[in-house]
Picture 1 (tube, rainbow, N blue to C red):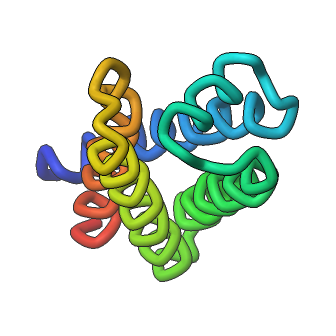
Picture 2: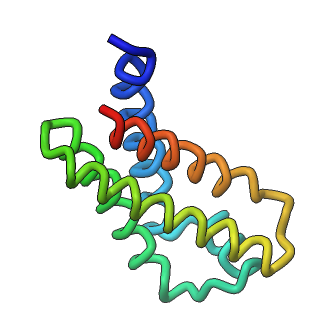
Picture 3: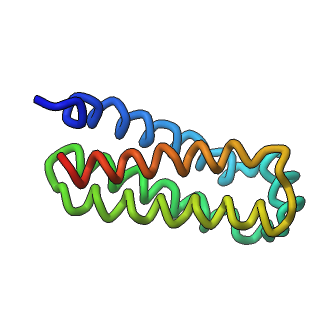
Length: 119
């Protein structure tokens, strides 16, 4: 068993939990989400859709853990694209004070994709 296989479950489970957890404030919507989305120029009307995309990605990763590997890989690709977009939105808006958050989720998504594809 390689390091990649040993890391697979903990990294993917962490990505699932973190992504699902950050989707919930979008649905509420929490004050910090409203403030951040206003700063980066994302309309409040997009928040439910963005939350559903995050939850779909987390759910797809979970299904991948259950054995439907291709769905897990597709979900990881979707999350990589989603969080890359979030980083781009922050950069375009020149909002760097909290760019570590989408960048951290992007890193988790990239790691989940790499591990899912190699597993």
